[in-house]
Image 1 (cartoon, helix red, strand yellow):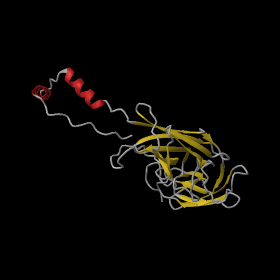
Image 2 (spheres, helix red, strand yellow; image 1 turned 30 degrees about the vertical axis):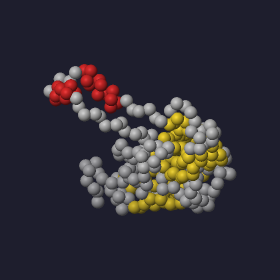
Image 3 (cartoon, helix red, strand yellow; image 1 turned 90 degrees about the vertical axis):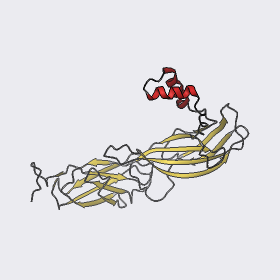
Image 4 (tube, one colour; image 1 turned 60 degrees about the horizontal axis):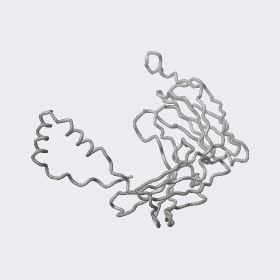
Length: 283
């Protein structure tokens, strides 16, 4: 929510100027400090409130649709009739962040659902919305959070004044479990070796084809993956990568296209023995 700023403070009086001089000397009266804190710390009351709710808090593979309802009201609780309300949905993913940096932990695929208007009671509704992805192609994000976020926003005035009011709700998408099995061509590798991983991705019948599911191989902790492939019609895959001297983490995992199919992963029993215990690269 963005609120208008306060009006500028009036010109200092002689008393205020004396107080300012006292502050400069480090001897500010306690009541002056309290007054300053009150003037700067109390946010203005929001002029409007937007609420948004979903008919379901949880969805699953066979039941992905929800109805969205909400209200727009003034600070005194009176409804705002014929208010335009913009609606969005976002499918949430976890951000790949092995470094621990303070970055946004959430990635989003966001779709504009359009604008609806409130009725005489300040209420609005948008029925039969799918709590799911809408793209046929694979997501660029690999780690689905299985949560779908809906947002409603109301802009009461000039679009350039940045005074917008928001409401949101989130639906948990219960995914179908999948499995991944594997075999590796070697458990000890050195720089220049080719690591080959074969295996199979499966999930329960009746939940869509497994063909074309992405399978990803990570060999270094700073990368989400270093090699990838896709499964065949039966879910089988082969992925291979050339080993570097600094590869130090070996993980295989799947990334199904369907947001309601959970990926599966396994740590591989592979060790890079390129470097000796002294830290020198072996021939």
